[in-house]
Image (cartoon, rainbow, N blue to C red):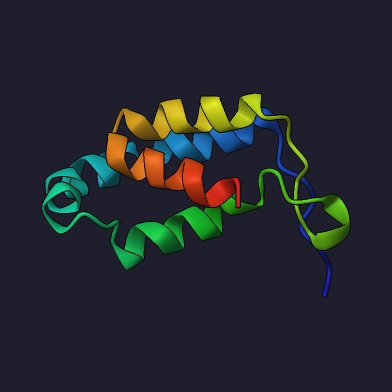
Length: 92
């Protein structure tokens, strides 16, 4: 399998910005359920957010920690709780 090239900072931020409307729509339900939806989790996976800090030799992007702050800031415009979950999962 051909590995995906590392996205740029701008591409990662664009992916996060594109999720804001979906996250906003789900924010109240996230608060009620105290968990992000499977759809949101899949969207984070497909965007590569969980690979931000993963070493390149394991298929990750090896971004610096500031990417966490920038991506979470964008996601938080839609749902602060979902952004918080992202930060926890992305640093595991």
